[in-house]
Length: 87
Image (cartoon, rainbow, N blue to C red):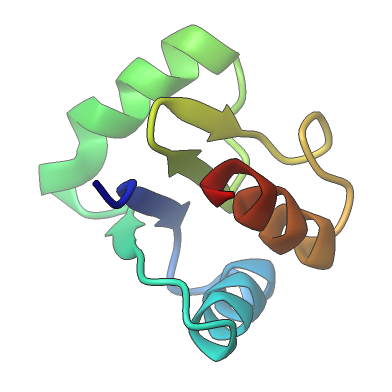
């Protein structure tokens, strides 16, 4: 079964746009979750409670979270880590 990828982002974030473009170029499907939309507020709040991080972009690959400045230091590294998780 293919793992679900969720990208937590905002529409104003250039790093988020870069990440989504790289994932798309690599052929990696994802669901974009705009954290500024009211319907995503509870989900992102739960992630914050787990991670104590409200930075974007943040990724959820299956059950694994990739957190900025902890799991990756660059957008390229975020994509590479995502590919490693996917196998």
